[in-house]
Each structure stands twice: as structure tokens, then as C-alpha cells.
Image: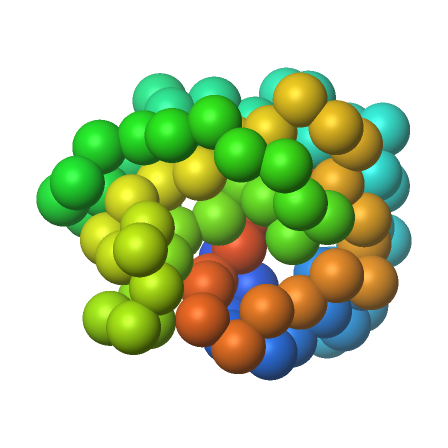
Length: 94
């Protein structure tokens, strides 16, 4: 069963899933890599944008970043070990 959850800033997805007694599965990210899914967890005040990065899909919380308050989706496969100090991410846990 796929569950999506929020990973805090600087926390790897695999850590968040493990704390919930689950595993991060990178091939499952395609099911949660959408603006619709992100907007169920984050405000996305500045809308959504397509970017490349291993920590996407995410929500940008750092006001110093040009994508501040945007929800970001990607076309590359996200990584379970990825984290970023300026974003909170969606996790694909099974």
C-alpha cells in the first residue's frame, strides 16, 4: 500500500518512511509527483513549476530561493536519500 507523507527540511525520505515502519520506494514517486498531490499537503501559494532535482516533488520554504512558496514537480526519478535545507518533500512510502 502506497502512503504519501511529508518529509521535513534536511530529512531524507528514507528516514521519514522508516520512522513510520515503512520503506521509501523511488519507483512509486510517479504516483505522487503532481501539483494536485502536493496541494493536498502544502499551500503552494506561488503555484507549481517543473524542475530537475533528486529532492523533488517538494514545497519550497526558504525565502532566499527563487522558487519560494512553489510546489515543484520533476521529470526525473527522485531519490529516497535526497534532502534539501530549503524544502519539505513528499515521500512515497510502502
